[in-house]
Image (cartoon, rainbow, N blue to C red; front, side, top):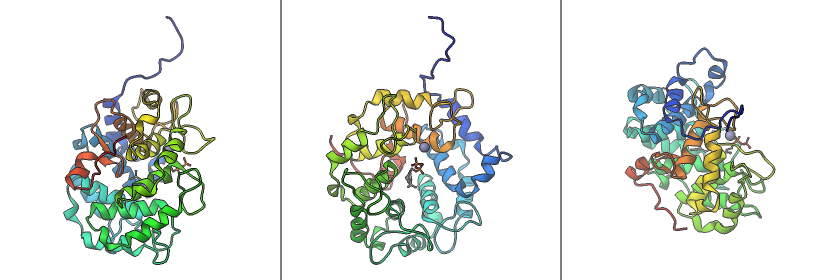
Length: 327
Ligand code: FPP
Ligand code: ZN
């Protein structure tokens, strides 16, 4: 049938995505590059993880990446987003994830990192701040326990109190927000479910109610949103689907339609995946499109750990991967 409409992309553009990530570091003259300086360590984690799931981590030079990660380290035990930037839990987790992926955790003083992370726990509530100045947020509870678990140092915090704080962030709809009373949001659900999984306390979740809320995030076009009344966005293919995977309910959404949505957000010219079709691709949405496809078991990607957002082969090697829950 003749048509002037562009054909939607229906195949996974693996080679283009590999080239897209490989070229990211070569765009040093672009405004986006300089404006995202504070996120650089996160960006390396996103790119490396996407490459690893496509079986091509060697595209980045291991020793160069490790040197860069170490250049973001502060003696206090935390990592900043780029050399010269203050340490924060968001970047400390990325630093640990990259080193763990490269089996290079022995290149840092693990005890000092554990000390930095545990110093950010509030004695009274059990919550975590992202740095010494910041507000508490369930994102930081997740970053803290994920870091400590990867370092084998969960005993350095009051885990029961940390769990109690996250449990208080559950809402009437069974989903979770950033602090007690805050609106349910799928990104925070990922953090709370992941944190409770690491603490071995998935029993505190109303899994059917949460599963229903998560499955309701799928829209007619197959994409997932992060909250009711919001637009679909590829990154929620991760935040929503990983949470469903951890509670054993991926089959509660239409997998084929979600696959079609993610593939439609690929850029057929430059490679990379955007938040939605036709938008400019970036490494963040490229990773979460790929992790979503991996959780759906499509495109022959390596399996991703739904709790740590790292290759399952790495979390298995470290002995922290959870066996999947039976549906
Ligand atoms: C949505 O943010 C996402 C979140 C709130 C979750 C962020 C999770 C972390 C920082 C933990 C570390 C993550 C990994 C994968 C290891 P948004 O600001 O895009 O939300 P919006 O769509 O409402 O704007
Ligand atoms: Zn997004």
